[in-house]
Image 1 (cartoon, rainbow over the protein chains, first blue to last red):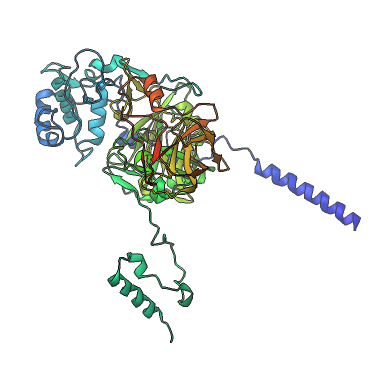
Image 2 (image 1 turned 180 degrees about the horizontal axis):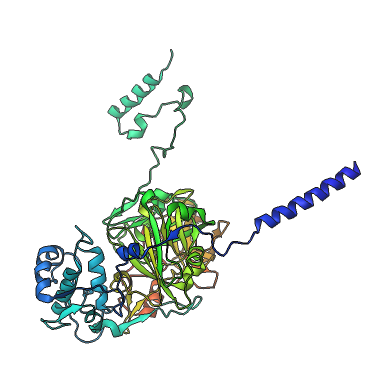
Length: 191
Length: 396
């Protein structure tokens, strides 16, 4: 009886040791699940544009060309001149000095007074506008609409051509006011 | 006389004609011990007399915290915020592309994602704009702060996938992109991606709900909800943030010092009394004050309750287990002897951070900044009649 108990104990110890080894098996460097992505399938959905212009596609457009598209596809929601709504107000430079959105929460955040990067306009219009047919605009149309909106906000000349090389160079007035997260870590009070 | 189910139902239907009776009561036998009950079923239903609803306002719906118990939000009551509706996605066609500054750009199907080692974690998800702006006296807890919900999320760690594709040394940020009609994008620091970010495909034990990102979403514990991109289809690894519309034009906080803050991700400690609250009415006697507290900084250490408008505070009981970055249920017994009383709660998190008053928060930020990341102490007024209303505070 005593001998059997000892044997049982030994067997249990071995079993526990083996189970432990199996539970804590090292994860492999790679699992090998999934498949390589082809350059074509990446290009098909990689539409984002960065502030330095990375990701901007070939194409071009001017404000005059954009005005036609805007009237047909955008004015319905954003107003005839981009100032009327009912959806986001896109055009407006007031206030001309300072950045007083905290003091005046009713001020609309327009492209001209609030958006820090011109590339964001192109990126967003191309991916999400118009809501009735998102992603339906050609690159030329998006360049033209971007030119229209930037010109309406007095940020580029009437005849300026927006393309791969010019768009990222547009200086946005609000850029200087944007700062990255700098709250102190808790437990300090966090503004 | 033999009483049949038909007789009982007819009797109940008769009651409808005679008096005010709910639809549920018309189906309910007078004595359930005298009628064989419903058979087993493939999918259960809520009791017809207990069907809480989200509060729908345009492209937002809020969790009705006044109707809930414990810490888990039922999946179909998890708050919603969509930017172009809820997309319908065929899981057989779903794929997640990871590319950019990686050694091996790869595509993962849903079944690929499920083959990787999985984790389950209980976490809150909170919209950074979670403070009801239309806060009149008849504001419920759900209207005031219903844009936070807690679920058990199951998925694969993003770090596991990033190891699979081989992130290059220069990479510091990634772009997460959804496959809704907004093709919503947010930039995420690599440090968070490698720390505790998940690609979640499960919610409370089953597939994630369509409104929450089916079949798979990014989940960033403790961070503002918008960054946890739903219906995730693409991750691009890069060396800088992408400055998308949702992190520049929206989800930024202007300050009175003439700056606007970007990338304020972490949600701070907050608490919410969910009972008593509007529209409850109390009778004098013992009341269990109940609520939830949460913090993006980790665990809730303590919740304090005041029943005299903040003059004195007492420690509430916390329901164990207290989980990191999850709703924590608190309870406090109070003997209401009548007369007007103002009840409030404040949370203290594991760092020692104390939930601020509205005045403290506005002093820190300057006036006019009250849109995103507002976590002030809020309260309820118990009127002498027992009627409970929201303790109104001016917005901003």
